[in-house]
Image (tube, rainbow, N blue to C red):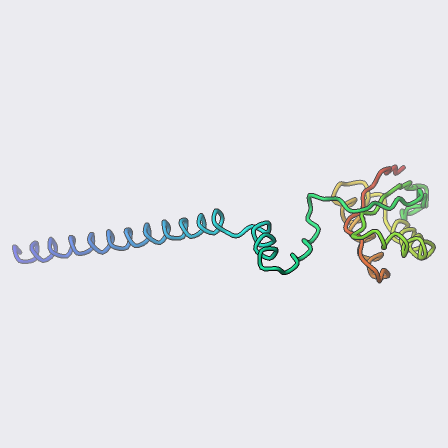
Length: 170
């Protein structure tokens, strides 16, 4: 029996040392991952640095893409008044909106295609029920659908976003 106690006592320290080794390895991996993430966040090259390097090398800097902080040109649509697709047809929707464009030349194309785009918007609006447009999620989905359908018809650019400036449903 004395021998059995010695054997169990010898096994326990080995288990503890394996646990400590695994714990140390995990801590080192977590610290290394955090250090790598901090390095990439802090020392990553910024676009301004790239432009300065390109100018020093004698090449023209690339035109930066439009980011979310700058708003593009806006195109204002006339008001839309449609009957909603509710049973009985007693509800209506009045909407005024503006579209954010990705370029100034897109406004000319929208002006040329105005009847086509108004038809798209009227069709989308009149296909909705009061329940679909009365919630914030419904309004967001409506904006996305209008923007997607209009962008399918445009060739010289795209609409970035739709902004409702008036939204009345009754």
